Structures are given as C-alpha cells and as structure tokens.
Image (cartoon, rainbow, N blue to C red):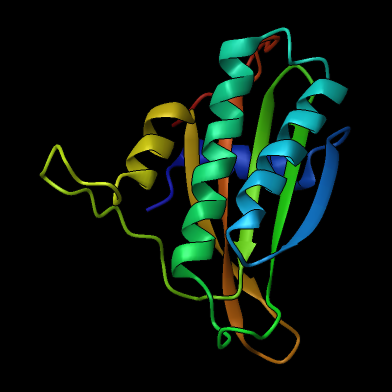
Length: 167
C-alpha cells in the first residue's frame, strides 16, 4: 500500500514545477543493469551529487536492483523478441531525487526474502526499502489497453530544505 508520503513524493516527481527529468529505454536483458547504473551516475553527476558519495551510491544501487528485478521477473515477451524497460531519474531541486523503472508486466513486485543466509537472490526489494526514503508501484497503462507497472524510489536530496509532512 502506498503511504501518504509516497503519494506526495510521487506527485512532486511527476508533476512538480521545476522538476528535471531524464529518460532512457533499455533492452530487457542483463546488460540493462550496467546501462541503468551508468545512466543514474551520469544524471547524478549532471546534478552535482557525485560529491555526495553515500547518497549517490544508494541511488545507483536502488536503480540497479529495480532494473535487475525487471529483467528477471517482468519480461512479457518470448526470449529473442525485443522488449524494453524504461528508466528515468527526476530531480526536484532541494527536495528529492527519484528513480523510475517501468516494465510491461502488470504483476506487482513482491518481497520474497529468503530465510537462509546463503540465499543468492530474493532480497532486492528489502534492499530498496532499506536504501530509499520511500518507494511505490504505480500502474503503467498502454494505448492498446494492456497494463504494465512503474516502480518509483525516492531519496531525500542531501540539499533538501523541507519535504512534505506525512499525515
């Protein structure tokens, strides 16, 4: 369930006056993860955040985890057919940085952490929850009536003056 704070952050990220957006489409394949990390680092550098290494690494790691999940769990076309994932970053100056990973699958993301310390997968959304200040899944409608989803993760900017208060 999306919290009031997540809804406020989503509204700021998508409709905020003065928000800066950058978008990229990548193929739904393993190489997309590296491309997404490079894209996120490039945007953070453009916005002057690379000097905030802890912040930047959190954002890049979350982008990487979300794209990994899309590649591993959200493919809707048969192997060999092209399918893209849309990724985006948004900056609401002095408030938030948001990252978006949108795919073609309508299936909601699931936290499926394994109890075993030796598990090699299943912790991605737990990591996203731990590193991001908020995250949410939103529907992604297509003109033909099909529906995918977008996963937004939000980070309070290191230069933030004030974030909306949750109710």
